[in-house]
Image (cartoon, rainbow, N blue to C red; front, side):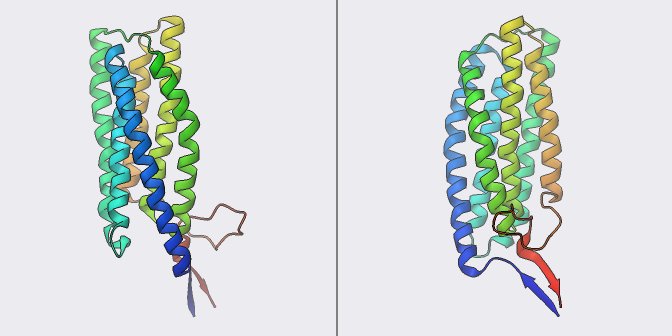
Length: 228
């Protein structure tokens, strides 16, 4: 006999509402972040900072795709399309940052110091990990590949924050102007990797038995089966 184990209908409704709240929080934060980062990056001629701001815009698109999916009566029917939208957002970011970083290195354009950029990167480095963890935990328990993929988009923002902070700090402290486009190229490489995973749907771990209450649930727990 094959027994399917997953969240009860009541628990699934709770998790679905939580996903929607996390999506709303992600969109709100990233809209503010995008405006500040692109503005500061334009003033400082910083490709990395502008790329960081564009990642925020694409993260809004990613979160909006998840919101669109979970607005349907049966979210699973929209999952593949939502995953493709998330993947394309990664690829778009990588393409822009690669072109602009290469142009900056070739022309020798020097990025200026940006206090706003450093502060913004530091704040994001503190906020994004908690938001990503909540998204991933909820998505895994719900068995939603898109929610998990969106959590990886948010986690990428954490990585970008660290890379951006390092690049801006090095440029400010030592005058190494090449550090800014170099940091941007690293951002592009990470974006391509995550985009490929989202496109292939490779964002969920191997199904495992339902965990203890104090344990981070395995991915796709909604499809775990037991034979008896």
